Image (cartoon, rainbow, N blue to C red; front, side, top):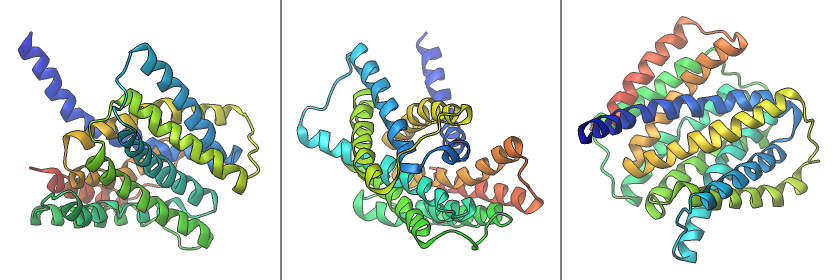
Length: 294
């Protein structure tokens, strides 16, 4: 029994990165379905509100432990606002303001390099030459995957600024959580993170948007998918990966998101997927393999 349990745990650890990338990549697909029917901050206000209620019920039913101090609670809240507010809010706002998805993916795709540079100073992590080569290959691969989709036409300066804000949010959020709250309970910690993000959206949405929502079938499908699969599934996996691994290695997984998103868009929306993109996927996977190898 002990051997079987250990084997299952080992299989779970191996499968977690791939499952995270797959689930995280569907966020762009969910946004494409839902954003025509609601403005980005309003969309996220409803999404985070639903997630907070679900996690609160789960935490109470399972009697999950809560942070022992207000300082720890504050750290968890800050990490949640960085990832859910700045990163996801920035991505949704950039797409809503007309920035092509390829440009958004490319800007946010710089995150592994930023994380690797900062992780050594903030967390004391050593980044080896092999990993730097992997980061470089990953970026080249992302460029190849997005080459056919990148268009510098369209999009407002506000949208480009939102993309840069998203890059800062996911980089800072990953490092902050690893430094201050890597051992948070996924249930109670999720309540705090999404509750803080809901409050942030509740403050910003009335100032920036009309807050009108069209509760159509596609919108409700997108909302359900983003609540259950992204917010409860993918973000929980991200917390687990941050807890188990070095920040720079976890960040390198984000290089795989644009290729997987392109594959999903090909099957879901019939978007073009040429030989250059396929070659880029191979280069990206090679780069990530070098970056995460111990």
